[in-house]
Length: 90
Image 1 (cartoon, rainbow, N blue to C red):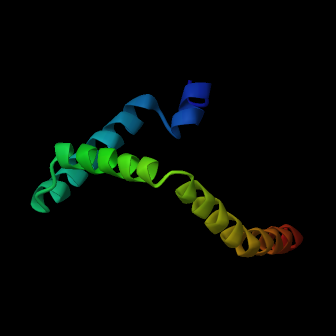
Image 2: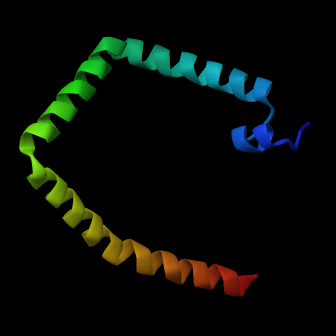
Image 3: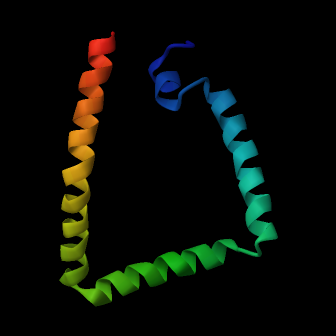
């Protein structure tokens, strides 16, 4: 079942992916602990960020949309050119 739908979704066998995630979680945990960052700090930061965005109202949503469109003006044409160039090389 190496090519089963679950393996394709996970990017490998479930056991191997679980082991990789376990090792990655441990390494990130050591780094965050060295930086004196605790899980509760991350949850508090996320909660405060959501609160700040909500308190800004729709102005934040409007600015987000403007930034998105501004970036898309550059990113989409460059992406299209790169896709066209890569398809002609094949």
